[in-house]
Image (cartoon, rainbow, N blue to C red; front, side, top):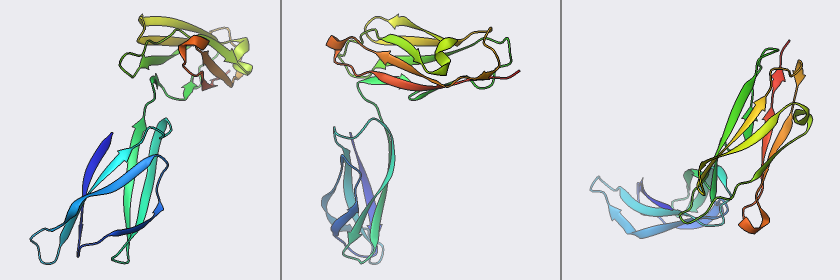
Length: 189
């Protein structure tokens, strides 16, 4: 994907070099600088493009260039880069602080985000201290395109802290990489 932006300056300018450019990002001028009609102002358009090698996840980073005006130009890039599979939430399953005897269930929604991708059903495994009490169950919401993983902290869990990992492992012939989520739960007495 790409977005176009316009920079207004006191005079025409050129980018001399990129001091900082996030991996997978391309910023290029579109056409020449034009007068804005206001005194000596000039406007220059740029196209910002995310390449296929931008890592998945939230991207919030500045791109900084030195210019022929002797001042730096900064673009603040903000994007949520989704891979072939979209996970909601993307990284963590948090149970908060349930009271002793209270059962809590949290869900991870899984959806294919590319047309034509058939979403295989993964196995769900709980690792770490959370494994002795929590359980995970995969539900098919829409065959081939949407799943839900329910993680349950049962009512009989004793007071204490239960960190762990929810690991989703897809069949090897699916070509989909496994995914880990941090689990945090603390049962209060």
